[in-house]
Image 1 (cartoon, rainbow, N blue to C red):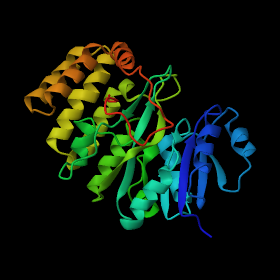
Image 2 (image 1 turned 60 degrees about the horizontal axis):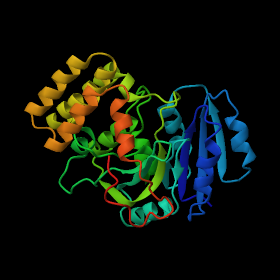
Image 3 (image 1 turned 30 degrees about the vertical axis):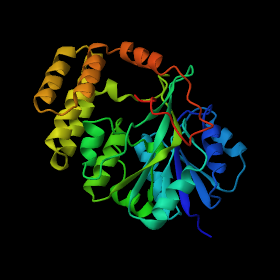
Image 4 (image 1 turned 30 degrees about the horizontal axis):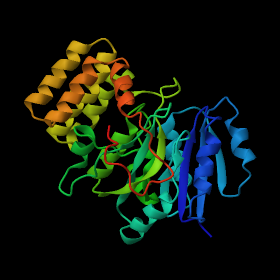
Length: 314
């Protein structure tokens, strides 16, 4: 019998986190699933960790190093399930995530389901993201590019046919969450956000991940790519926030501030968000993140997710 859902996990040198990621899938309340681990050229002991779990639901595939998006596409192509869920190898599903997502898809199989995440920055710093779902009449490109919307890869569940139609961009090194959401929306798909968190997102600067902040020119090239199908507000807002912050980190703060000023003129942000962005640009280099981490120091109980605190915001 074919599985109902295929969980695709790309891995690259994550031997210390992959077992926990896979276990979080095996503990889901949906037994009819398969796990496709696509090893993107790892040189550590990740393969041995996967094989040691010895579960028939796990499929391990190796490919030469081609990037996370290529690995995701490979897993999507191999998926036998009606639906596909994405999970990064250093993240973990929370209990019930697949069951809640599939309950939505059983009634509306063409929507894209995502959930809030518990952001784990280490040292007890945890908070929920995003602060709100997309509004009924809100364009997804504006939600994720010029506001605080966030559609995290490790919470996505969608029809396999949809994932194969839109696919990830093999050449994109960073910002995959935003790009995939924008292009899914452009293809005509609607999004449903589950309020209950679906995953724990490990957001720790450990030197093993590619940061969007370190590739401003790459992001500018991506903006040119999506320009035909996003609004001016989304385009200018993204440039004035995410690219401006990346430029500031690369010692081009003045250029970033010019992008930010242009976004202010176009009223891309609320006053509160504009103030946050300005601080991120001025305090680039870790100072803003360190300050934000201090504000989020109160613990979030992952064991009790039924009523997440409204004060847990980024």
